[in-house]
Image 1 (tube, rainbow, N blue to C red):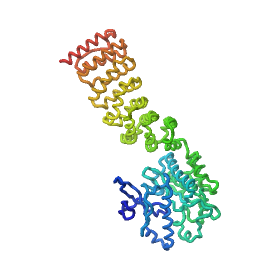
Image 2 (cartoon, one colour; image 1 turned 90 degrees about the horizontal axis):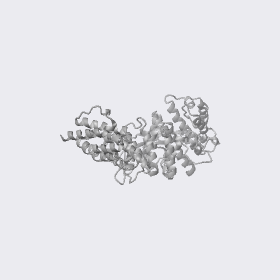
Image 3 (cartoon, helix red, strand yellow; image 1 turned 90 degrees about the vertical axis):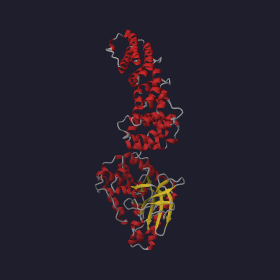
Image 4 (cartoon, rainbow, N blue to C red; image 1 turned 60 degrees about the vertical axis):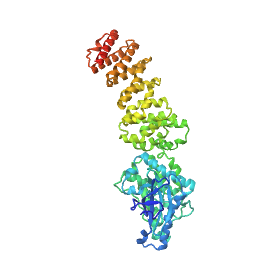
Amino acid sequence: MGNQLLKNYEIQKDPYLESGHQELWKVYSANKLDEKDRISSYSAFVFKKRVLKGKNIPNPIKEEVFAILRKEPQNLMKFKHPSILNLSEPLVEHKKCLVFASEKITNSIQNLLKSNNLSEIHQSEIEFKLHLHEIIEGLLFLHNNVKMVHLNICPANIYITESNKWKLSGFNFTNKEPEIQLFKENDSVLKDFPALFCPNLDYSAPEIFDSNTKISFAADVFSLGMTILAILRKSEENDKKEADFSGSSISKHKEEISVFLNKLEGFAFFQKLPSNLKFLLSRMLNLNPISRPTIQEINNSQWLNDPLVQTLNYLDSLGQRDEAQQTGFFKGLMKIIMKFEPGILKKRILPKILEFITKDHCSSVILSIIQSLLEENNFFSNKEEFITIVWPAIKRLTVLKEISAQSLLLLVNGMSKMGDYLTNSELQSSLLPLFLKCYECGVPKLEVAILKNTEYLVKKVDFPLIKNRILPKLLKLCSDERHETRKNAIFALNKIYSIFDKTTVNDLIMPILEKTLKKSNNETELTFIVLNMYDGMAKIIGIEVNNIKAFDIEKVEILMIFLRELLIKSSLN
């Protein structure tokens, strides 16, 4: 379609979606070069006027249809809110069409309902509630700030963006909360062309066609209730039509909707709903507008505001909280983290909490959360998920000038779980510098942790680094004055000494083992570990030493000298 409709936009040839009022808008992918010569994606809404040619509509009536369609982009320009479709290019009118551009949308709820592609609409109960919160936020803005009634809330006017947000549009009939009826069937255009000149009858409140009832914000509450009902019905029984509602005319609308609502509690899908949701929907769909809850009351309802949803909503505003509140939130999240579905955790929770990982008061508890997820079998389905979602945040933490001891301890203890998702080079370049500091930090907990993980670490690190960077630090701890540190260092050395060559064994390892034995005061456990290492080193070099454990513990020094002499002699040959 080229640039003929919107300046600086390249609009694709074929539409990928029909949407909006009576699906008269055709939606096309559109690209635009920004100031930095990057291509950004948008959606172009195009209405081709020739569509009305075959409908026997007089020209004056066509102009009224055009006027209704113009209201959507015109109102989008006025209504700026994160839950309302963002207009990127205002309405441009050509001789043959109307066109405007918005942020990129991927679909509409109506299209997904028609195609029975329900996984995108109702992925889980929590996900569904979160999306409803997005629409409710838009309605709260419309009712409380703009003082307008939408009057055409329905699946066709709810769009899904590239970031998986639900956004409200379809402001063709939006009006100030009126005192009088807006839609009268005896109006000639409504009588002859009701579908074009009134909101969607399948979702409209009955009072908007009743001359004895004022239209109020409660009309939007009813339409939202019908929209929720349509989604839930499709999700539960997508192969049945027992709960479908289709309004046939303005004059019969109130009667038809009354009959439908009287049958509602008998529908199988409705009976399966949670009791608090059934109660909420019954209130929203009350025929008497005065008896319906406000949008704010819906937002605060028991069903919509369960603890998990409250947690996710609080997370959205966490950046505005003080340090104590942030810390308290993360500690609370730690207790309930596994109650969330993996999809919610990966898409909504982890990306947001990882933004706080470099904050000193948050890093340790966030790392604890990551560690608990890693301990769940196959939480990350593949390495790419971990690398994409978590690893960039951990890398930001590793390059800080200072990192808390508790955070460092968690990184060390989580080494093997994280390391399974990392290449050797990734662990070596980002985590090894931190791990090396643990060998000489003087903090007992960190030293013990790194010693217990040394066997795994050497599997991920190049040999020159093991020999020149890890081994000297490990050997130093083997002769440490502190018994616990010395013992764990000997245990660690016992698991890795076999990878070293004769010279390293003779020049570096054996002298340290002698010092260790002298400091151990013939402690049985450490002595036998050292002797076993001598036995192992002898076998590597090619010397047979039989039944080493049978030696008298008091003769260890004599045995040690004998073994060392054999090893030295063998290494010189």
